[in-house]
Length: 564
Ligand SMILES: *Cc1c(COP(=O)(O)O)cnc(C)c1O
Image (cartoon, rainbow, N blue to C red; front, side, top):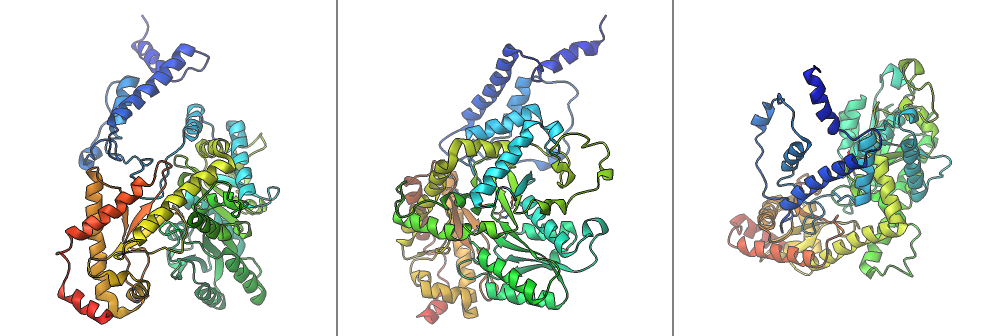
């Protein structure tokens, strides 16, 4: 009699894709997937969520146990689908919360194919033409942003954070050679704008620079790094004998789409090299994980405007492009396809202008004895990761093929056009002010003032509120007010009336050090259209009415008096 396990292994085999051609089983695979999709579809409703939001019981989850017996593919699929309950539908036109994009169908197919055949990009011996896909996706991106394709190279990594980590680690090796082996024994610093991404701190900590050695440079009211303060800080660091591991230029900040003046940062770096006679060239990394996609407009004829964008949209696109065009000046660039490239997570690419920079990260072959005897493409010799999925490059390549330059222009252009329309609607009301007027992305930050306090929303008084310490009480009171407006708008959206926005607790700091709270609309769905914008204004005005009696404190009156 056959051992009992022989029966069970038969079932297990059915739960795997078949290794040789078996069309019937292929249909079973597709059917299983279809079955799961049907169940997800049943969760869809008019709200921008998949069914009601479920309160998770983490305590129970911590005590979860491995079941004794097997389940069927169908049972598992149903159980997995249940984890989608309450999930935000990121592609819904009434979801405008954050820089999270809905992935296209081809990008999902790319992920699926890589998942099914499980290539490991560490080495082409284990990934064959998936390795080619990585080189191709990197090549296309290098060409798109304006790097010389002969000199540039890139690898996909574990997120935008990973891309900056490569930039900083390469820069550290340039500034403090040999530290990849010996460790760091001198002080190195990293400069980044205060509106830049906090991942600089995590990275500095993880690579041993220390997060205390990230120098946060204040930004101008346009959310760009203040070049004078940057220069001052860089000079001070060099005079104190510190090494500069990297200048990070933020090319599209997370909260406000601020774009740093990369050209000026590179020029500053060059001046400092000459003046201080530095034996290394401080590395300039462009954190363009959001802004890279605007490169498609580098050679758009804004005069002809063949795609027919509105004048305001054109101005915005051209404004962003003025800076994005400078990307090839950076020594390395971070690109997130999962931010503005419409792929699933994780699809992040770091590009270096000069492929030789990657050699700085190379490990000794003796450290990797069991790998890399054959093959041509061995990024595993220098990547931080050992195993590396091919899902990211396949998804990126899928969208490049699907959209082409034209398609990306239309997608990005549409998001910006919608954001500009929203701004027009918002600015039509005297109690609302758009905070990031001079930044041109798909994100709009705005602040609302109560009826009777519209004066705060004028340009001059806003300046006052953000720069004069005498306004501290008013600022804090209106921070609170905006939280309440946000809560109301959110409640309404969850009930199917309105749009899911988010609230930022710190759009930026006032000159006197207090955070500025603001409502945020981040438009990332190709499905957003006019009607989804008008309702935002409607809901905000409704919130003002509801809160009318709520917030006119004596303190407020005093401050208003001061403004008059
Ligand atoms: C999101 C973001 C990051 C971090 O990227 P992940 O992909 O989330 O790791 C870094 N920089 C900027 C400007 C970002 O918006």
